[in-house]
View 1 (tube, rainbow, N blue to C red):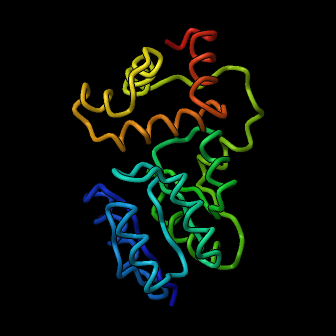
View 2 (cartoon, helix red, strand yellow):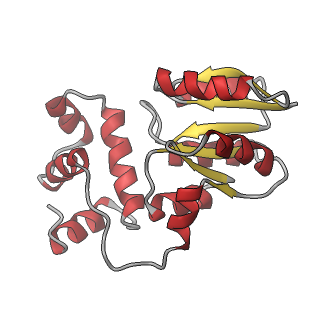
Length: 204
């Protein structure tokens, strides 16, 4: 029996994946989390074979959380779950120790195949993620989402994460998560480089 933890903050997605797992005799997912903090606490007492991890969580950026998990529990296989199909983010998850990457629009069989594959110490990517990885690196930069652009403009204006969060009526961790995702998306090392690129390429 393959033991699984699911970390996903959208109840409808959680219920959908839970239903998929329940139909598989070799999969058991008894622990569900909607944030990274609760997951890390639980891991101190029990470790699963596989963690299916949403990249966008309310408290901890999934890219950072993956690294934290692998540094402390190297035997756990992490499969990223995301709506984001940007090559830079997929590669960053792999660099941080993920064994797989599943898009939320993937077919049901793909998440099951992913779990069975990674426990054999092999990597797995959903069809759309695999297609993205195979594409040659292009000079065309990925576009900013409306929210990313909104946050980046305010970062460029010198506002702190907390100030931006207050203005947008969101949690500061949400702003931090968007900031880190943009660094990965554009493959830059820090916020200064991100702002410089955004201005040079007229992204903002």
